[in-house]
Image (cartoon, rainbow, N blue to C red; front, side, top):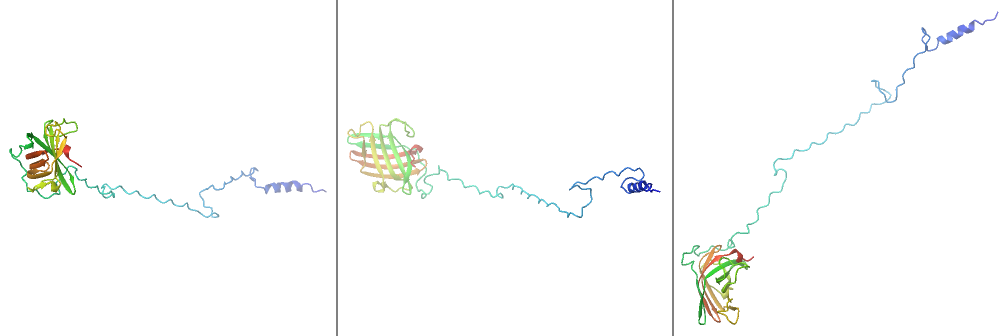
Length: 244
């Protein structure tokens, strides 16, 4: 007799050994695949843990100091010297009176050339550098205008220019030997018909009172080839006559 029944039983046994559900005969659902790098919360001992480097904290910005001196600012520069400081500040103290009464303020300067005698009614002055100090530049004027001379001032009838006189500090007489000079300008031609000007050959000036930034009072005698100019001078200060 042939043994054919053993084959089905063997097939059943073979299927029973497969990974299906024995009760239902359905195969197991496929197990989800875990992607590389995915984490299910469990540490993979096969891969060593690498901590990310810590980013250092940014340096703290220092608060700006409220005090400018603490901030390192350079100290402020000292103020420049005032340009209107008295020009006589470095000179020795004056022994002359700094006030002038009515007689002192009255000019009486007279030109005597030949047979002609004429007055010079008023005077003004400025200061200019002379070596290490300052000197007076004085203009005794007659006619033309009042006040301080300007570039647009009318021409006076005559002018006596005295220059090189050290700023007065005492009653010492100054002369041409000290650098003092005197020049007469005759714009009308009354005193100098043949020439517009004449220079003194000898000069003597003595101060009687002075406030160098306000006025000077002087006694003057100047000798010219044509005659003399002599008398009392009261001169007021003019900025327009100040030199550099």
